[in-house]
Image (cartoon, rainbow, N blue to C red; front, top):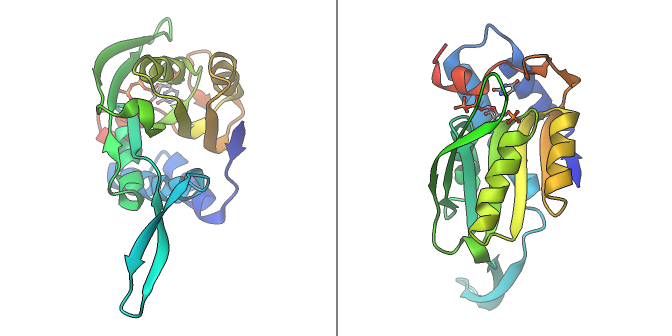
Amino acid sequence: MLTVFNHPLISHKLTIMRDKNTSTKDFRDNLDEIGSLMVYEVTRDLPLVDVEVETPMCKMTGAKLAKDVIVVPILRAGLGMTAGIMNLIPTAKVAHVGLFRDEETLEPHTYFEKYPKNIADAYVIVVDPMLATGGSSVAAIDMVKKQGAKNIKLVCLVGAQEGVDNVEKHHPDVDIYLAALDDHLSETGYIVPGLGDAGDRIFGTK
Ligand code: PRP
Ligand code: URA
């Protein structure tokens, strides 16, 4: 299932990020804020369990999340969305998946992976600002599934239809969330209109 957010705050912040004149700091700050806004909706269906709590007035039955949440940023650019998500779910654990896309073939290559122990039993949120060909997201989801993960959501900022189709084909069980579905991919595999190279803009490497 694909959800494309339609929220004025997200659209406003994303437009700032798209602007080629936006500074590294403003790009990062807006990505952080959009991460928080998106995860609020993405987690809407997380199951709860009852817990007993005593307020200053009386005992009552409250609720807490039934399982751990594990955030999986796809390095590097996914790191830019992680802090905003962790602001809303401070108890979340973080798995890291390092992938880079070959500039010629557009194929993803793995260079790092590290997972918390209980990933098989947790709610897993894979994050990456860009869903272009979808190769990196498909590979990252393959990797977390190999670790036993079952409840997986993919949260990206900007996507292309090709990337959405690729993830839906390989992982039909994974819900996809986007802040925007853009028009097309360029010949060099960049999303158009997009926002350029997300990793370079987050980390100031170009
Ligand atoms: C970018 C982006 C995604 C990937 C998207 O990462 O952050 O991970 O490309 O493209 P795809 O959908 O065609 O796979 P990149 O490989 O440039 O690495 P970086 O995050 O380190 O900049
Ligand atoms: N990766 C990016 O950072 N930007 C794109 O437009 C496509 C892939």
